Image (cartoon, rainbow over all chains, first blue to last red; front, side, top):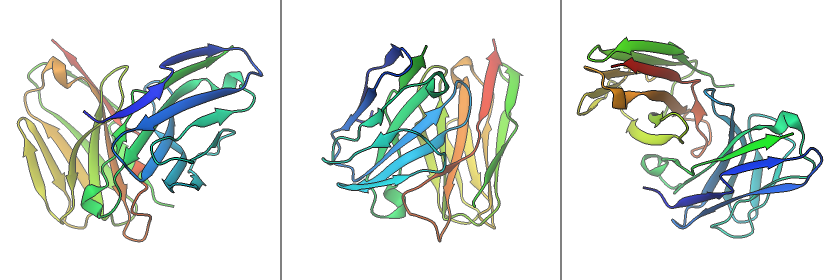
Length: 115
Length: 113
């Protein structure tokens, strides 16, 4: 089992609040990712990072922002939550390097509900 | 951009029946990976295929990568209730980033005991 942790697991919050979803991994992986997934639906890449101080927007436009100040930590922030942000957010990491090593390890996810 | 199509979207089987999900890419892939997500869980890596025509087996699961490296399949023999979940394929293109995966929409498998 991979050592990648997300907190909180569940979050119910009111509209307009600022939230930060935490993601940490202890594997020393350079590459980290955030996906958004509605129940039973496909995975949408919203942010990724190739290493410290490197962040890129993913394929799905998102109002969230990310930072990568430390290798092990990749938090996602919503400045003003809205009901349309209700979803599951999955964090993942991969070791990078050769193609063979680019397996993604996922955290347990944060289920966000914005009322 | 690269697209990865996956069919069927849903499959319901009786326990003991076989199951197959198919993955097709609009472009040639460097590799294909398969993940399984149990209901309420997170995706977990199953296997990676890299070579043209490659076939790999994990107990009752058989994975294939097409000769043109544009399609792949996952076949489960004699399904069990523990096989329930969504199966995702994911691939990379040779010219794309080594680190970004394009996921298919997944196939949800339900098994009637």
